[in-house]
Length: 256
Image (cartoon, rainbow, N blue to C red):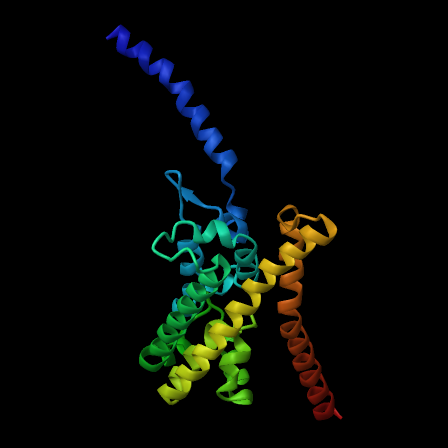
């Protein structure tokens, strides 16, 4: 018994050391960093491509994925295209890594929109009665509805490049029972444009900065993410500002 007790005492410090090391390696803030998902490994096996595809699907397919890093994730996927495509050994060698990654992301985006449309057509109206929660805000639903009513079917294309809005627009399309063939046309076009433009932009800008200016964009990931967040959210901020100004003007008119 004494021997076993001594062994336990020897193991106990090691357990706490390993736990502390694991906590140092993982921080909750990493969940909002696209690079974390892209470079993720499980048991030494890279699973970044599968995480990227799931996140792209979740943004619209699970309608609660609007907090996930969408545009910046695609841009960084272009930078890490070779690493992401490595596990896809069934792809012929003559296909470029960046094209394979862009196509795979497009497919995930298409399927995600289909799930969003299906949810909207079957259960979407219930969202208008749902209370606000941690991952759901009713105002996002109304904003997306207004966006859809303004642009019609083209809203599906435009929404792909707008965070939050792209999560709810397919649901709105399902709620109003938009013609399925028309929805699929806009769905495919928007997914291909969104995926290929951002993935190829990341891939070729990385090569350009490395060759022309000897700047490795992998060392400036945080700056890239902040820039992309600023660019993609600017239209939403301006829209909110104009909407608030319009409401204030109406209130002033009513008072006068």
